[in-house]
Amino acid sequence: MSDLTRPKGPRIIAIANQKGGVGKTTTTINLGAALAAEGFNVLLVDLDPQGNASTGLGIENEQRDYNTYDLLIGDVPLQDIVQETEVEGLLIVPATTDLSSADIELMANEKRSFLLHKALRQSDIDKLDLDFILIDCPPSLNLLTVNAMVSAHSVLVPLQSEFFALEGLSQLVLSVREVRQTANENLRIEGIVLTMYDSRNRLSQQVEKDARDNLGELVFKTIIPRNVRVSEAPSFGMPVIEYDPTTKGAMAYVELAHELALKNTVTPSRKGS
Image (cartoon, rainbow, N blue to C red):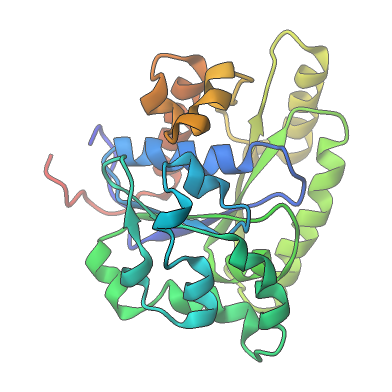
């Protein structure tokens, strides 16, 4: 496991941005795979009704008999839903379009914002020996995203290097603040990850400068470049670090995983040194 140590208990990170097309699911898949490659045990929770994270890890629709809908609504034990992926150390709770109706069904539940929090703290989760739980949120600030924030320790925000990127971020920050005040006082911003970055583009450079000037150390040092191989990998049902580990995109996600792990590892390794 390189020089990193395991975090104390599973660190739960919601990966969220209400804007679509910012690299949220791509970041979830590849960050999870890169953390697993570092030797950590990772669970990816697909909370997006589109189920793209599940598809991107090779989980076909017919393999999703139990999914995140059952975890939230059906009260099915977590261990009955979790599936292995082709990536060693990376597990997944897949999603289906059933989740699209969850918002309506959850409204009648008094504890509707705490269902994922409860599900991810079932007693049998210890058997999975997890280090990180990454939640791929839908591209909206709906009840599913609120569930993710209530259950999480922190929120990681992919930020596309484009015009108006920072303006869209303000609403998400307000949502985090509201959840912190009403349901999860320990929730924090894990960091901002610049995605789809083109170093030849002045706009990308300006977005990076503005982000670092305004948000300081909240912005990860690692930048995810715009990369064709990263875009291709999901169609083959695999993360880019397995599809083409030598590409700049793959190496960037490895660097991001290392940077994230260093921020969160606090206990000695239990995986042999």
